[in-house]
Length: 143
Image 1 (cartoon, helix red, strand yellow):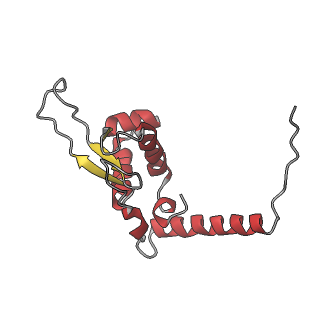
Image 2 (cartoon, rainbow, N blue to C red; image 1 turned 90 degrees about the horizontal axis):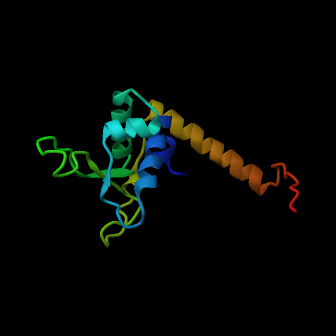
């Protein structure tokens, strides 16, 4: 979450990433079936174009990888028709994670670049305040 790839994502793509992470159970990475329509339902959205763009953003940044394309020529009862995904930072099929997201760099002066720089600056400010003991400490009462 501290990477430029993650920080450059919009809110829809971040939410979609968490939905995909919820499907992953340490045994099924590479077999995460999620269609655009089901993703929209899980996100509580009706705009399929926004969800499609979120999938594209996640793929572009190397956070997810399509392992099986959607296929609509097969009857629904025979196979899943949804695309199949893999989280690139999690090992899959006895292979180590590929971590393609580490190499992502947002195009200079793009919306993604601005979002990433602002997010990274906020993380730096927080880390500085934390290390300088400038964050308020709330007293908690435990019984």
